[in-house]
Length: 231
Image 1 (cartoon, rainbow, N blue to C red):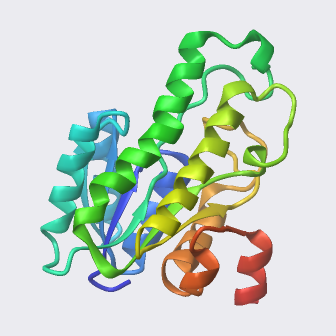
Image 2: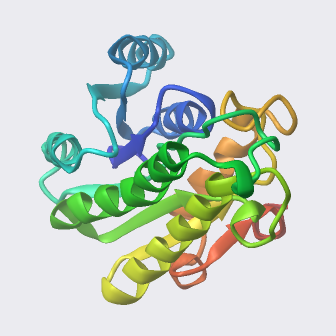
Image 3: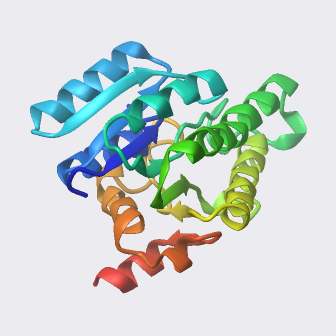
């Protein structure tokens, strides 16, 4: 990824932070964002301390004007535009597994959809004018988007919607847009169970650089595909 430009939304925690560091370690110019300006500054400092290149912007994926500014900033790194976008920003309102849809508030439902689905739509939409010819867009996902599980409420609904957004952009644009499912990962959002985010970050680098574009485009790449390709 030497000198490539990669944008990571929600890049200060969990999978987003791990992916931002992975991309920077691989030589990419990483542009990351989150809503917490202090967390953005700390993440950039940590990446640069390890010898990486990173730029941080306080931006809310729910706000298309924030996202527009983010993409315009990223596009300035290279004349041919952005190489990869990871639409990672997401929220979960409540305790994982304890938010049944039957008890969901309208506020939680609305913000799950606004952040986790509309946020993906805004991220890809605002990136489109700045993507280079071989650019890829990755949308982190999980089995909850396809396999109903109790207690995940509108969070699961929003992840299913995010996958649908990715498929829509895949068929309507010339870019490789797809989802990456790293399995259960231990984050503040999903809870303490699962793999460390750093363990799955290389999977995103593989999807961004080595996986066949036709395998990614409109599809979900999971642990099985990653392990089969890299073992």
